[in-house]
Image (cartoon, rainbow, N blue to C red; front, side, top):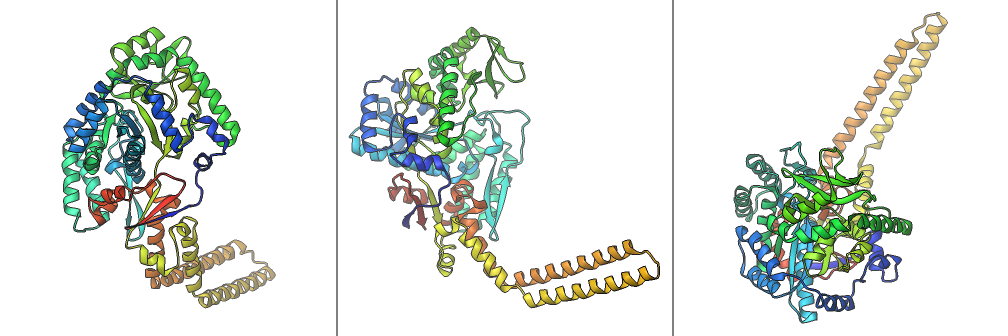
Length: 538
């Protein structure tokens, strides 16, 4: 396994500016991302009080049904004793979701190890599962490559209700068909049978999207003691009760300062990532597993359809007595993390960086401090099948993401086209059109008006010439199919749909090729978050 670090073409201005220590974007955060920040943040946390014993018990009770490794047990004991936490999270995607979910988990684990050594304090990794999210369409699919072409594979079961991932039941028959289709796309290797068996075993032991996600992640990262917690876990909701009260008591002010900060962020040239409004309560009400976004209207907390209507006092009582009926959104989730967990740093991607940049005044309003924002690792895996093709065409991963492989393919197709045949067809077409023009003149002289008939005939023959041209082109492409598929494979593997690999594929595509120890091998590389993109040759 070989690691190369490259600066890939900029795809996110906000993240690029965040790495620039002189950029104005730094004013939207409490800390710059550097070593001094971790020392300062650790000192700040030492002055705060968290019920880490209860938090550890909650995490333990959530993880226990999925199995607790020795490393996880050790981290739970450290958490109970007051360890600091590196937090990162993601929605409960199928087969762990896009690869950046795995990259986040690796980032969390490595950053916790790094800061444990540098600070000389206990620091543990925690993956926050956004099981409360209800947009199932975002998590119900993955992509594979088949015959050098990209395929979107979708779990087809649908629900008309916006139920949370943690309460959305899996149709196991449909899900098994999805999994088997995806693995069939991967192709058979020495690892396929065991991998597929384990995935299906976890599937049939799961009830919901979140169960399935947690089971797979827990197995993949057990050796490294990655702790996991579902945001919608009922015991955690009870733990959050008093913190929901704080969010409700300062609800209007939170909305106002977020709107103002987002406008400042927009004026700085970064847009409005949240599209916050002053009437948004930034909380969801959960009813029968379905989430309804609340807004303040006419002194009530209500939803868009109006069938939920609560006074502030009623909402406060719900927070105190039945907090499982409440759920956070992108504004209140970071605030809730800060109130419930001793977060040393939060690991996130470009999208999270954007909306976190709007939240600094909301943290201050609640007498909180925004934790360090640690950008997750960016990784592209270069499989063995692609490496010789890159070498043959003198391409790098960076070249591929810049569109050079696509350009080379198009140039090759142009070069192999039978231009002589095209010219002959063009000549035939010109001769025929000229003959039609002579015929039309003759008929006009005979005072016969058949222009529409001639036009239709001419159009028909032109269509036939186009058809003949396309068939010749197809035959030429078929003749050079091997070379064209090589270009397609390079593009599909490294820059599918003009996206970074980590945004479309799931990790099992590579675990199937290189075995379940692949993640351990990546962690052993001891990667460090930076503005560099990590291209790893397998």
